[in-house]
Image 1 (cartoon, rainbow, N blue to C red):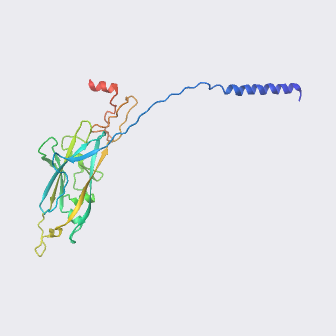
Image 2: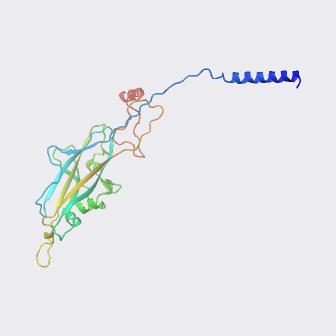
Image 3: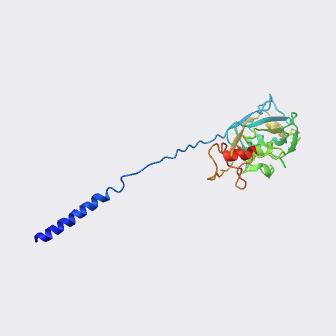
Length: 266
């Protein structure tokens, strides 16, 4: 190879080397930024308590056919999220019988009435019986709610929030405005008077039977709300009555949104 060719290759190599060095220096400057976010979930919390000083449980013995017991208890939303439904199911345990009856037979002797009551009345007078036919503790435990009006059944469960709302148009149990709902339940020991051929009452077989029955309550949330890009930061409006249900959407703008606060105050 001639010296001229060698020099030519050297110049090309040097130019390539400069090119590589130059390419590594284009990103000498950069800058960073961070957006701080905070997400905190709300609390769904149902409290079941007595209405005044009245007892709320049916804890009674020495019963006979024809006895009638009434109870009222209060559903109170003590969380930060609005409650959409309070779904009730039943279960039973520890049946004790004389051998001629079963747990289901015994439970079928107790008729249950759910009634709408005037939440604003101090007399707790029933407004309307929401049962359209015979409904017993056996039905409650088995999950047969066919005798409960369809307006008060959700997913095969009894919606106590709907029953307790009465006729004032409220739905669910909101946080804002603060509200409590009262549930009126009446249980009657049937007195059918049927006798066997030997003159004994058929219901004699239920003498000294006993069973524990549980009212299981489940509070549910409303659907998720949509917070748009023009809504400010703050507490999402998830505590209001009649919140999102798939067809209706409350104003989702957050508390602390200056524009929203100004509209509300106008």
